[in-house]
Image (cartoon, rainbow, N blue to C red; front, side, top):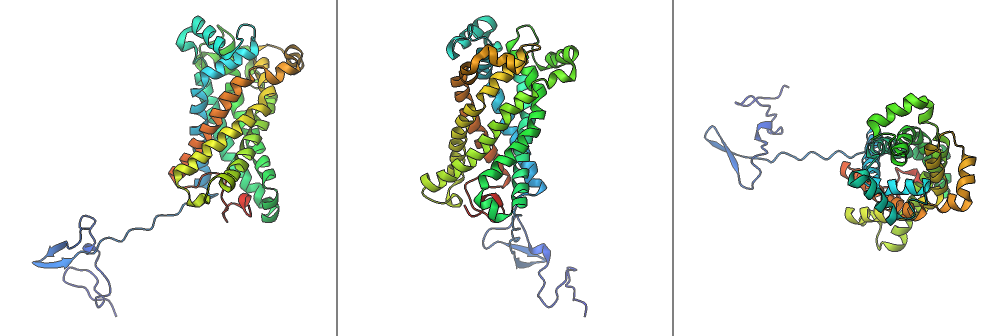
Length: 357
């Protein structure tokens, strides 16, 4: 039997179906009513739609991680351009740039305030691309390797999953970074080479071709892959221990502010370890990109083993510690903003890499 219609043309169905016109978002106050044809009808507030729950390891999740990587990596590296500039010059010419303080003094005297930000454009572009690949592919490979290994192996050897995922991600990210790193080092350490990205990239292509953009790829991988492996694996484990040993309650019971504070602290500590393990390769990258036709053997011979491991190290520890802490805080802040949990330190059924912690 067809449902009956009332005088207003809406289905009644013996009073069991509520006409849609009685819902009103503008009439939510208690006791309000809407007069209809000289009668009063009680207004029923519109039911709130249940907020859609975002799912981990979906295309939306990986897209968010990729965008978070861009936002956390490119701008932060650009912000520390003055430190990076002094560090690179200390590695290339330690006689002229003896320390952080004297290095800043020399640059200010010779080039002024603007000179402290020389190379900011290739830094922003290069590290934005690197961050997109590093964070986005890390989340992908971490899940991929966890699925291959299975829950039992992953829970027992989760650090291996972190190391494998981060190494794979940085292999791709290094390719994205290398051309801009080559331009950046020349702009920062070779006076008169170029003003920045707009003239530095064409000049490098004209003089050395595409191969010149990737001349430092092997030492860059040598610097960045161990750096990223340490960055992600140590961060994941440090955050886990902070929640176990320092924070008095489980992660899921902590406020977002506390969780993001843990992200920064874990990132800063991880950054110090990153600087220590990757510094020799960082010296090689600076040397090779500055000295035309030089090889790694030439760099080691000129710098010496002690210089290879220590030249510019205090500046790099300060820079990388702050940088890594800020990056993790920004990255996790963005994940929280779009509806995903912060990285590490929690046991979930959707993340095999942290199961059975």
